[in-house]
Image 1 (cartoon, helix red, strand yellow):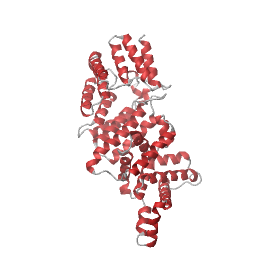
Image 2 (image 1 turned 180 degrees about the vertical axis):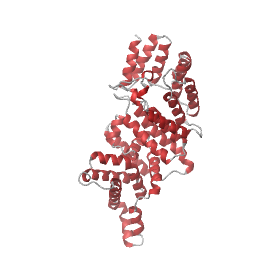
Image 3 (image 1 turned 30 degrees about the vertical axis):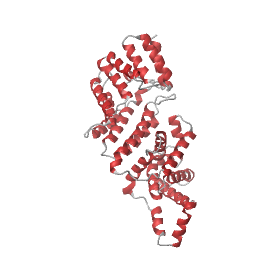
Image 4 (image 1 turned 60 degrees about the vertical axis):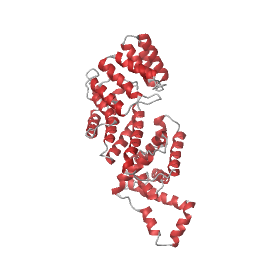
Length: 412
């Protein structure tokens, strides 16, 4: 077994291993460090001797490293001295540390790990980095590459997050039932941020970062399996599946963006669309929340044979519902786009101008992008070109910027 085998096993089993170790030791940081040491040892030993049970090997080795670390800690010397003096106490401690994994507790352990990684005491950036590291099993190098930040920055975020969790005394446990739904929203928002960055990168020279998007889908599937009765979990997974289904048609062979109206819909991933629609059906019986409503909008696009045949009136209604349950200027901007397709650009332009007047999306390239498109449809070409050039200056993604400049040039 080589490096790729170790990485594959780690990606699949990392959350379960770290969760179990955290429960055994009561120390989140120690558990993650011990698991990483086990992976490092696997990289050396597995090419020589392949274990019959790779996941079990990692668990056993990581547990031993955790025990060794505990015994080295000066703060625990008195405790071990007490255990040595009183044999009646020793077996209880040993069994607590060395017990085998209880399969009935794995789901709760992994779910608790998600809640810890997304705890409100952490910054948004730290939650994303920690979730990808300890739940997703990504290396700091992979996280840094995905978000286009230096590796030391990611390392610092993860280290600071673990110290913050320790200092705040965050327990490794599922939140009480009355708090769980509120805290679940934080977990979902982290997965949403990860997927959104993967589906439309905010900066860099690539429009898509599919590795990041598919990692978010993998984590969302895991969360849906752990929380099958939560509609918004299924709503988020549906949104991710339906959005990712269009990835194959969103860029050309050279990576250049292909707009929705120009996409070859035969290249869409219809297996992903079917999975997304199935998840949306699970979210629907109790009424759609913000993620479910976004998934319903994505489903309307996915079910249409063309842009012209899309049910834009339905999409407008869905955006209106979304703006009531989760109001935001981005939702309002998207509603304007849908209104332009359903009823024409004049009414939509009034909505965009109101957003500008209220300064609700300062510095965003999205507002001048939409405004430029609407002005072009109204025949106001010089104004449209100026808006698209402004959008290009504000856009940090090189691929999107090139499309905006091309559009502006065609209006010359």
